[in-house]
Image 1 (cartoon, protein in one colour):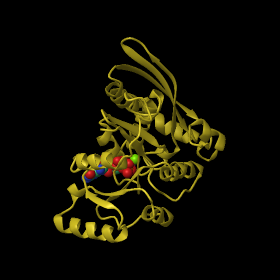
Image 2 (cartoon, rainbow, N blue to C red):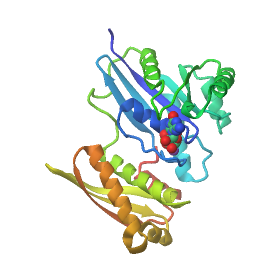
Image 3 (tube, protein in one colour):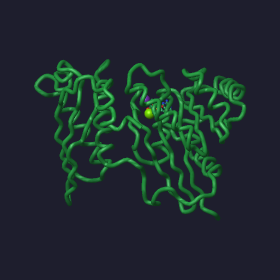
Image 4 (cartoon, rainbow, N blue to C red):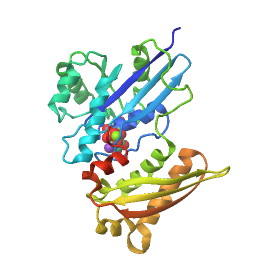
Length: 293
Ligand code: GDP
Ligand code: K
Ligand code: MG
């Protein structure tokens, strides 16, 4: 059989389960997942290789109306998801009625590539609600193939994946067949730390944080890393560190456990906190953290 390969872009509102699905497809925790919106900031590629196929999946930030520069740049990642896709995966969750952004919705309806509309989190619904939701989305997006799924529990995930492979065009692979992602190791270090911050700190703190891994040395038995947690204000620095450094210590302990799982090796990590005034609104800083195109 001829080799197939192509780009599959996953889009949808915040928190519908896009990153959970991407990780389920790839079989690795490439994308961080929390119950908070804007957990995913970058476009992250996850590559699934088979003998006669390569699916390049891209997880994107949820669709939002940008309020500051960082968010505007996050939306550029989403917009580019339309440009190079062979298959569009549009995810909604059970109970959801529409996309927050009308212009995006029109783009989906008129897309000239196959659209799979995934109705996620059906583990939380009952039969009647499910049927009426399938009906609702059939009317809204007539061209889409609709699949009820549970990304978390794996229901229908393999079926959707098989369908995606069927829809891929004949093509040689785009990336080496042993690659899993396009992002460097340090990116995943940053993301794992940011996930702990999203989980443990309240309100605006997680949104004011950016992580930079300054050192990453792999030795035979251990990987040594040093990462900076960047905040926008002095008061935020104090909150991140916490009483007697306990809050920061917890981030370090939990991040290290996940990093050891991710890299399959012992990890030593040093964390420190630095104030970088208003980095979210500063173009030069955003570029430095990989947000500008
Ligand atoms: P994203 O913002 O679209 O990337 O969504 P995430 O993958 O980060 O998931 C957001 C939240 O929804 C997390 O708490 C997930 O555990 C949860 N979630 C994702 N998929 C499912 C599902 O199929 N069922 C249920 N009950 N929860 C899910
Ligand atoms: K999320
Ligand atoms: Mg996400």
